[in-house]
Image (spheres, rainbow, N blue to C red):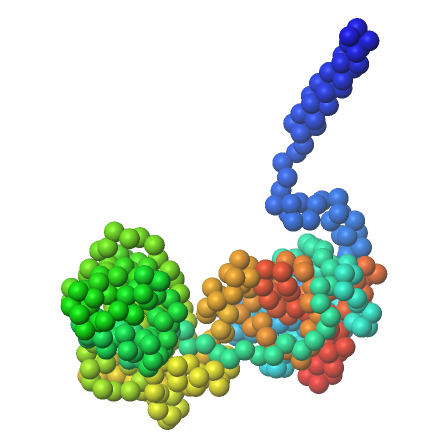
Length: 448
């Protein structure tokens, strides 16, 4: 017993010392800035020492006085490369000494979103190129972050490859007569069950998979019996309620002024609050756009216009009926989606349609799909800001440095200070693309 006592005292002293020692150390720690949390200051200090000789080779690209990207000096007589799609007419280049210059020449390779600028300045400090094929997965690289004075670090995360272009985006949510339940469906129980079993419409096929087991068992009963019809209708309404996500639109007064039928109102006012966000609310749509559907016109009805999308900029409105695209008839929302996908971002398409009794024709310049619908990809939804133009490049090197879009156009540098690529797109949460130096040099010769 007594022999164990000294050991206990020793352990007690060690525990107290460690506890108070750690507390003191934590108390003495300075505030950790956001930049140090991204890349610790000690690590950055070492990499900035490696990067310092390259700082004069990085410039800022300005539009109306605001930085929109970076540029990389590629010759001592004023040639600079950058990302093309970010700038407009009021373009300036700010050098490392903070002097500003308007480019005398601007040449663009649209396919790779690449621009070659020429400013009237001599004795610049061009980068030194390296063969991009030597860069292996997992190899450390560094790159300027938001301006020419900051650097971030990461690793090569994928081997070089082409990145194919995505189709353009109109920026609307659509409906047509095959995509929702009609009021008659709720009145004709036997007819609705037959449609669900045979999968006549897309909505019927969807319901066949999504309805509850309780409702599916009722569907097997003799539905010519009034009691079974009533049981089916009573079970259907809660099921539909759990599948409807536009109920939130209704709660936001999006349907003010629309005369909803009693069955729809019953669904909306149900006490059951679970909402599954995988399908449009067919019943509300029928109430909102019943007159357009009753007219018998083919086409696709715009249910919602995405803010700042191509459709929004062209003046399209919710409730518009799109009848044709480039003189080709539109036979429903699926057909319109198919036709839009045949065009790429930046293409201008001609749409015709109606708004009430008024006919219209509009020229619409399609936007980029991912920036129009960022919630389609969870990686993009979690990314923060991404580049509008992210695809369609002949070849890219992929790395994991979390660069903002306004850092595109800067160099991707190896630990020996040589450049293996030019950053061209922040793709998503975990990937940034760079055009490999071999492709960049080819484009420079082509554009000079």
